[in-house]
Every structure is written in C-alpha cells, then in structure tokens.
Length: 138
Length: 91
Ligand SMILES: [Zn+2]
Image (tube, rainbow over all chains, first blue to last red; front, side, top):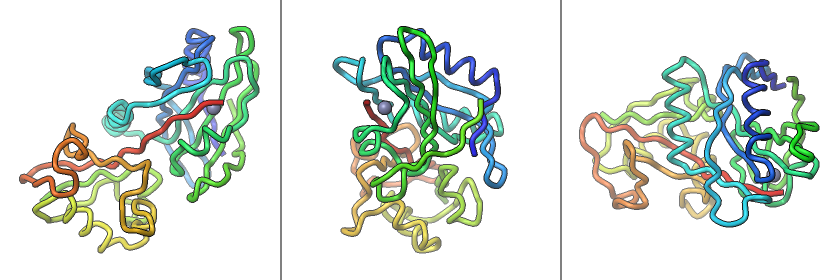
C-alpha cells in the first residue's frame, strides 16, 4: 500500500495541472514501514523527453540521482515515480512498462482538460512483463 | 574503500543497508565484490549474459561511467558509486 500525505499530493497534482497538456513527471520521497509506503515529498522533475511531450516523458538519470541524494539527506528514501496522462485514463501503458524500472511504485495521474481526475499506482514486476495495481491512498 | 549507495528497493538483498563498502581498483571490480557478497542482488542488476540490465546506469560520483571508461573506470579512495535507473514512459 502506498499513501501520499496531503502536502506531497497537492504538490504532485498542482505540478501535473501546471504542465498540462504535456506529461509531467517527478519523484516521491518518503518512508517504508513493512508493507506501507508513505510519501512525504513530491518532487517535480523536468520532463527530458525530446519531442512532443503530450504523450511521453523521460527522467534524466542525473535528476533521479539528485532526488535520491535529497531523500538521503532528509532521512527519507526514494520510493516512487509519478507521471501524468493528459486527457487519458490512469493506466500503465505498454510504453510505461517497457521503460519502467521494476524497483519503484509508479503513480499515474489522469488529467482531463487541465483538471485532476483520478490516479492509480502500479508495481512493475522484475521481468517488466506486467505491472499489477497497488493500493493507493491520497 | 569505495562506497556503493544502494537504492531503497534493493536494500533487502544487502542486509537492509543503504550503503555497502567494498574494495576494488575499478568500478567493475567494486560491483563484482558487491554481487559476490550479496548474490541475490546480481539478477536485479545484470541480465543472463552478465551485462548490466538495460535500465541500470552506474554513476561514479557525479558521472555516468558510460562516458568515462565504463566498468574499467579506475577508482580512487573515497569514491562513491551510485546505481541509478533509467525511467521513461508514455501513454
Ligand atoms: Zn504513462
């Protein structure tokens, strides 16, 4: 289960709405206690995809490295990645699965007409062949 | 000694540590020392051909080793190795 604290959630949603109609992306920092992941910080990261960003996103590894260092310096962990689907539901696409990393929770936000609509979290398996849903609370 | 920073989800394979210290004169040797000591970790970093998995990037301090000498990149005392994934997507 992944729960996103309200301040972090507001930061993530407002970033997704601000970047609309493009896809936004970012990192989620927080803590893990047994099966419960708690996101305390939503860190916006620049979408580095070169080309039309309405349907694609890409994170620079050096930006993820910075996010990991920030988490460590604040006594937290990098526990997930978020991105948005403008004018489209929050599913985990084939492209999402193929370019994911089977180590993190992936939260997808559906943004319709610039407004947050719904969200889901996914956990890609080690072989990157499927990504079952994970319970998400926000 | 070289420090290797372990990403959160992989710490379960290294006795829950967030950093592992190893010895080695190159990045490749340091990574081999890491996976030799923690064999469960190997399949998460390497594919069946023994190459780093496609989404795994290795940084020496602030630099991607792909742009230095890859796994032959020499290590100096006090260096830090980070394991950083490539992540992208699209609907
Ligand atoms: Zn997507």
